[in-house]
Length: 374
Image 1 (tube, rainbow, N blue to C red):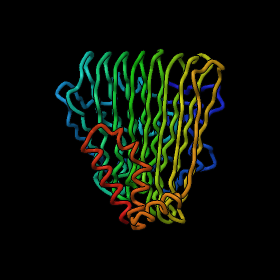
Image 2: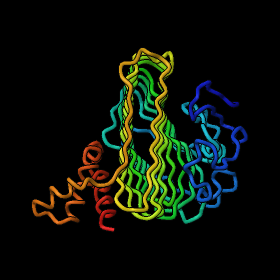
Image 3: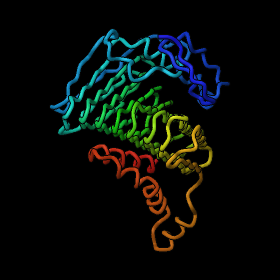
């Protein structure tokens, strides 16, 4: 499997399973210019040898099949080809992969929870997960990242014809963790994919969700929430590749930042290829900067190669708390700290309602409360 190139002026021009097909990033490349390479602990240049581990524990719904397989399993790598050096390094370095299969015509009775727990600070590890949802099946998946590690992985979501997959990915790492991950969803005819990403913990987290379509009728909704504290670097790089007609996508990510050197990066790339007539897509990013010293970089990119679209748009904004909102609440006897908390809750409220797992929703709400109390 060699290098594949795409003749488009995008940030995703090549893909390969071979690490050697990607040059070592220097930080001058467009796709790496926001990422502090010195904090990647060698994940980008091949010096992060496996010295530790990330324990994978699965609590599966009774209807779901879970397997631990070796690198030679033919199902791995079919839905996604690595698009940068760290992703290719993770693909070439993992030893065991977790495969979750939802049989066709099956509706899982409860969420399947995959907990990934780092074994210690500075301990490097690589991983791979494949979630295969067979035709007309339905399932919900929770990816829960905890502990401390230097970790790179790829997650494949293969959603077949008429199937539905809902995913909540929670990055709740310890403060010293480094995590670089690619999440890719491949959607079949009339398939539905719902993703909710919550990023709270870690020293550096760079998460790249992407979606591709194989037949008409695919529907993807990508939602994200992040809260960045002093010194943290949280980066989300999204790609939705519309290559077939009559598919839909919607992207909504919101984040709050507080503290010196808190840094959020959001890159949203949507490609509508010439053959993807009837596409309906929109992407939105909002950042709420709560203190001096925090920085948000937000770059929406929309590349349209056909004039026959149902809808296409994007929006991005970063700003401080609205003084008028705070004043309105204070004028009604609400103290400043409580008024601030209410405004921030309102900022996130619509997103939190979309988390369909009550215990995860409560956990995220509690985490946001804890951030505001700092």
